[in-house]
Image 1: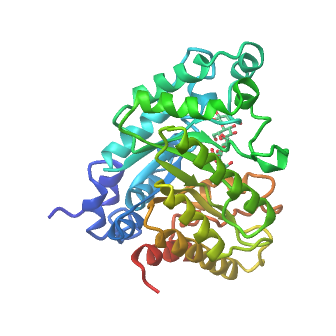
Image 2: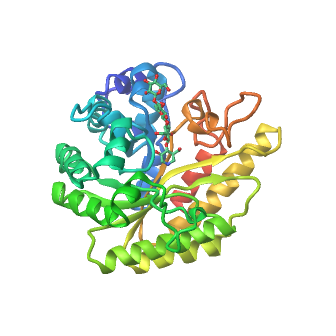
Image 3: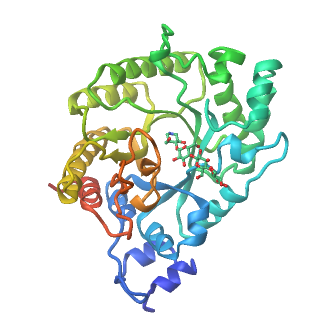
Length: 369
Ligand code: G3I
């Protein structure tokens, strides 16, 4: 059996399963023990992460880490409308194609994020939605993009973040969304029908955030999500699953496993699959001691994962990034550390070393105490 080296992985010559079954160390000809993808597979689900194509191009050590750890990739921004169709009719798939090629080379699955969101839209789109709302601006786009990747993606976040109870709508809908403003609630069903038509193979998900914690806002969001999903299903809308973004906060709010488990059970009872789609854990507000913070973040991660894994509808878990070196948490005003230090909310630190959270996820996947 040839010695597998980091160089081989970087050259993309190896399927990670082969790589993960052998050892690599921290030097160029080193060995890395099997990653989270192997642990998740042992439980019959997959683990993956969001990646920016630019980083894959520029950081060979990160390429190795992703190759070992991830069984699925999701583009962090390359399949958002503002990137794909910055100019009307001029599609740019360079980033998403690069990620799909990487996924195929390394034996990974791929998922898409997202056709319809109130954010990350090009200016021309929001203008058109305001002035001449024609549904084809929604359906033609989905047909084009889903059609391009037909049969190549595991799943899509068809609609992202369509609810926001803080806006006062009785149904908890995000009524300030340009899509809602243009078409009313029906834009959601329209998007799912167009996606199913364009790619009958991909699983179609509705994706949203802040449904995890035991506080008023998350509780109102859970209620609105359940109402929306029930309404879509009873109208025969082709939806296969719900994506729990899981941007968790370790300090300043409370996770109640029984509350979250009950919510997931209601989703599963509808016959929907569940995916954790964007897991990371903001550590802002935590102690200055990094070791203590890492430990407390990993404890929350494990408690959260145990609830998700206990639900038979769970299909997979993705983190929103793999390494603290490239986490949005360190750029987002509400979560970033004022002194500029990196948030530590992902499985690997900024040198791609496995942290307590990595071990918590691995043992959670394996069902180990
Ligand atoms: O690629 C351009 C670059 O060419 C340009 O020089 C630079 C200048 O600002 O912008 C770069 O694009 C940025 C992109 O991330 C890639 O880094 C956009 O400005 C920036 O807005 C974009 O932020 C992303 C954000 O969604 C909006 O799309 C974050 O990386 C991404 O982590 C975040 O992810 C969202 C999920 O889609 C939905 N759930 C919440 C999650 C966190 O906000």
